[in-house]
Structures are given as C-alpha cells and as structure tokens.
Amino acid sequence: MKFIKTIRLLLTFYKSFFFFNFLITLVCMGLFLEYGMSIFSVLFWLKLSTLGLTIVFIRSYKNKEFYYYQNLGLSRTFLWASTLSFDFSLYIFLLSGIHIISAPHMISSPYVTYAPHVINGIHMASSPYVTYAPNTVSAVHKLQP
Image (cartoon, rainbow, N blue to C red; front, side, top):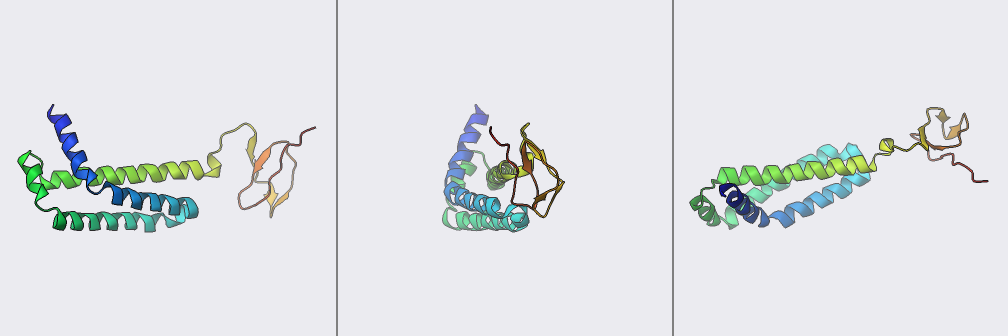
C-alpha cells in the first residue's frame, strides 16, 4: 500500500513539469532523427540544462508544495532524484528507439544485402536483391518479369 501511495505522489509531483520536459524530449528526438549520432552530445547537454532549469523553476514557484510531500513522508531529494531519473531514462529510451528505427544497417530482411562492392555509386557486381550500399544513393532493385 505504501509503495502505491509513493508512486501516486511521485506522479502528482512529476505532472507539474511533465509537459515542458516532454516537449524538450520531443524536440530532441526530432533533431536526433534529422542529424543522427553526430548531435547526441549537444542534445545530452540540452536535456540536462533544461532539467536544471526545471529544478530552479519548481523550487522558486512551487516552494510551498514541498511541505505537502514532506508531510506525507517524501523528502525533496527523493522527489527530485526519482522524477528526474525517470524523465532522463525516458529520454534515453526514446532516443535509443529513434536510433534503432532510423538506422539502415539494422534492416533484417532476406532481400537486403550489404554491398561493399559498390564504389562511387557504381555496382561492381550484380545482385537480384535490394542492395544496401553505404555512402551511395543508388540501389539495385529486383526486376519483375
């Protein structure tokens, strides 16, 4: 019973800044989808800085609400550690999902092959299957009779 009560209190606390943090997560996901791993470090520090701004905002504007949680047995440190670690874990989970979905090398199909024989977009060998060739734009497609 105490566990469920604690979870409900954490969700109530997290609800007060969920929208802002999730909006930042969505923006980061869009940028990560567009630019890939090259922008990950920038997005990592952007997310951490916005979490810091969230702490400053909530501490200054909702300072008296902490007494409510403290009276129910939850300290400020526990509130912040749990909600921010959940938010950051959600962020990393969603970025990992975007990375897995958008990575072309993760395609698992019997009709897709890796083509190290493609040089400057010129196919050095023919294949009846769709060919994944990094750093090229072209692909060989299986012709239908």
